[in-house]
Amino acid sequence: MTEPLLSYTEFFSGCVEKKNIIFITHGLFGSKRNWMSTAKALSEELNQRVVVIDIRNHGSSFWSDTHDYSSLGEDLLRLADHFGSKVDLVGHSMGGKAVMSASLLNPKKFGRLVVVDIGPVIYEQTDFVEFISGMKQLDVSDIISRRQADQFLTSYVPDQNVRSFLLQNLVYKETGKYEWKMNLRSIEKNMAEIASFPKYQSQFFGKTLFIKGSESTYISDSTSTEIKRYFPHHSIVKIEQAGHWPHIDQPKAFQEKLINFLTEP
Image (cartoon, rainbow, N blue to C red; front, side, top):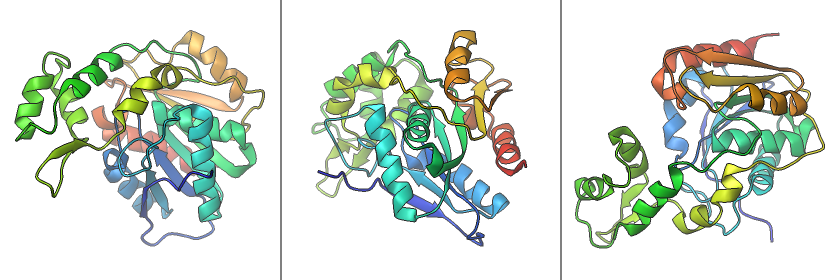
């Protein structure tokens, strides 16, 4: 059975139809709302249509028991077919692996590729398992405020900024109850898949930019070996005083590097 299209929001004021569409995908526990300001700025600066996307099991997109990068790549290919135009891809973290997968599944479908602070390699699952444990332990049917949820999660997620990020997924429904707007069960079940990356025989020969935060360890010398294997025409740039979320830590510097890459000959 074919999966439905991913949920997306478009920015296209004054766009030139002949230009590629830009897809932007978020990371684990994120949603398209994390990228709205960047998408708006890109669309206005480049006069291009920019589409911000909710990956499956996140935001307003469909839920599925399957959550591997081949499936995430196919989701993006279906959306590209829906628009019927060549696409430039931008993806952060898990979304970065999704856009890499899409480009390797069908390299001719895409123009340029931007991958934010992630590589085509396997990572340790680190704190994410603890985050999921805390969110699952929280009885959302019994809480009466977001502050109550924040207090409960403190022991699982000590960092206030991370808790605030996670709690963006907690929504208040017309029923008067809160619920998570992401599929925690599927994400937990598929954490090994999310931390990994498939082995592809193909390469993507389009121009590719990897953006890393200076304080992040996600792109290292060992990561670069796999990057070269899959993306021979790549470059890596660093954003100073930024961690795993350079688009949040240094938004102006991030947008500048992104725009420069997308507009260079």
